[in-house]
Length: 377
Image 1 (cartoon, rainbow, N blue to C red):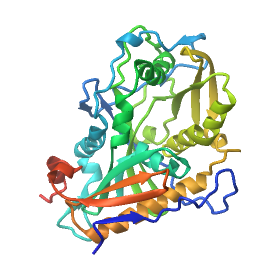
Image 2 (cartoon, helix red, strand yellow):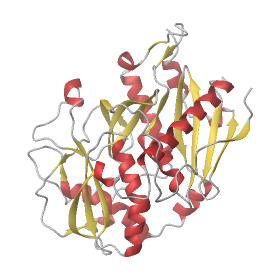
Image 3 (tube, rainbow, N blue to C red):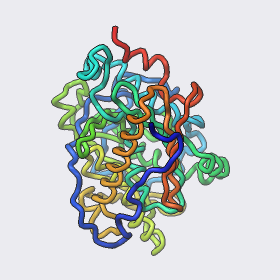
């Protein structure tokens, strides 16, 4: 019987920053895009690609681009939106039950997904980067149902206080990335960007991916910025889905100071690499902006080359994720309770991950309607 409280033994110190790392990269299958969905401006699920955007360029619009244009009218997400993000993945599974849900081999009287984990790309990315962080608190909740572990992010008290202290300028800077996307994307391959309407940050275009990491089957949703195509994409055609060329859009500092360059090399580039790696993105376009929010240059990054000559190591990051997933799986299998929720708190300053087993309706991450989907008829 597993303990109700404890810590996970993770390889926090397997790689010293800037030093060589000799362990090989773990086996990772090419992420396969299974389908997509949209999240509307009112935060409702839509089983279609209405929010898909197409890359406009290169050549891109004339520079500079003013990221503060229309900032007073921006529509931001409501507080606590992250709690619902995983529920949209559940809605996708509900709408595609015939493709994803099947009787379990070990227990044919129950239904399952045939995957070890269901989660979001952002959670996997964050776990991969944790060993290099020093001042980050991160919390996830996980539960095991019918052979699959569901993993959700939860806001910590520290993060809540930090968000509450954000100034109007802080929020505006957070919105710059969304405005940059509006400047360089369009809703149809033959159209142009529409930049004179308010940016609605609540709208999302999500893709569902499956992959395998060292024998661990993963199913995860990921918000996608845009796709490269000269023709409208048929997102219901499996052959088209398997050949999609997604790109990532970012903003970063123009004419970096030494401190900004160090921060990019040590931390931001690791996040960019892992985020793109998990969904097979090869290209990132970064709008380089000055302190006033004016994009002065658009820089192209090759994701593979992004990891070169950096103090972090892709193999170490991915192995950290493997060890965490294996330990979480062993723990939940030992508990063997479909209503038990494990809360894992990562403290990067102390390099420790502690867990607590929670029970009770207030802690559940799986809604009752989703549990009903996995009941045999």
